Amino acid sequence: MAHIHDHSGHDHSGHDHPGHDHGAGHVHGSTDKKRVLIAACLTAGFMVAETLGGLFTGSLALLADAGHMLADAIALGLAWYAFHLADRPATVRLTYGFGRVKTLVAYTNGIAIFVIALWIVYEAWERLQRPAPVLGGPMLVVAILGLLVNIGSFLALHGGDRESLNMRGAILHVLGDLLGSAAAIVAALVILATGWTPIDPILSVLVSLLILSTAWSLMRAAAHVLLEGVPPSLDRDLIARDIQSAVKGVREVHHMHIWSIDGASSMATLHACLDEGVDAYQAVSTIKKRLASEHGISHATVEPEFGQCADDNHDREHDHEHEHRHEHDAALHHGHHH
Image 1 (cartoon, rainbow, N blue to C red):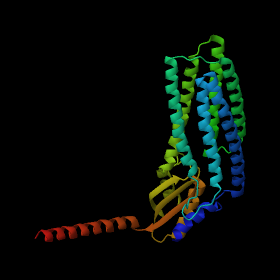
Image 2: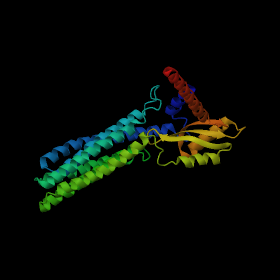
Image 3: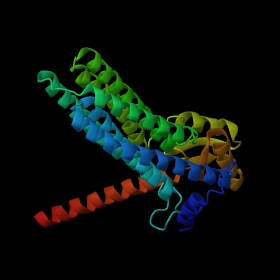
Image 4: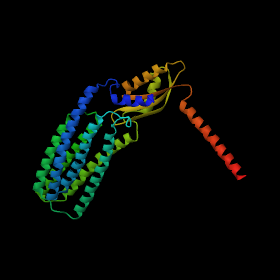
């Protein structure tokens, strides 16, 4: 029980983490929260205007950008909510707190963007078969306004914390919107100058391909976290070797797992096989310090061992028990036949 308590206690206090000023991080988080909320409101407000503009002018490029802005307004809103939830402490049922909400949000958001982008590609194909009239003038006005709104959102987010996955995702979305608005402006100018309407679906497909690549990278990063993958910046085997060579008395490191709850802070569990006579408490303490200072792993559970690994013994006992039960069943079966 003490072990479970340690997990939750350590995790949500935030004060145990070496070299981490909890106060400063908290202030940064709350300003990031405000920045994301401003960008979400700007994006959502203009998305409505752009949808109406797209329907009125008959421009698919505007509708494509509005679709992108809808996904981004949701993403920014959820990013804000994730910041809001991250402030909550861990509970008895959720011992890691709400850190993974951000990752779930990123993953679902990625799927939503995928669907929107595929719809735009399909719609563009239809338009190229049967070109529809597009009102270039009003389209240009809406696209320019869109660009200005996106620049406003970008500036609101620009001063945020670059280390935060949540913040980086938000900035990435707004950059995609900027490009979408720029594409709509180009399409409007071409239509006004030449009257060539196919430019509208062609550029909308380019925007949707851009959205698809963004969604794909977002989903891959989120799926990696959800699958408890080793964070991309860390090498598990290298870290195990580093502990073996750097910490005195450690003969071998095995059963090592490294993962992240939210894509930002990393955790590890491992078995440390120690030489006879080594002070286990000292060794565990040194390993934890080394993981924090050299590899940025803020929370680690280290199981010290002398001689045989407890898990090996457990496996052997389990196999022996299984064999014994198998023999017992066979004997019963044999007796039943007689």
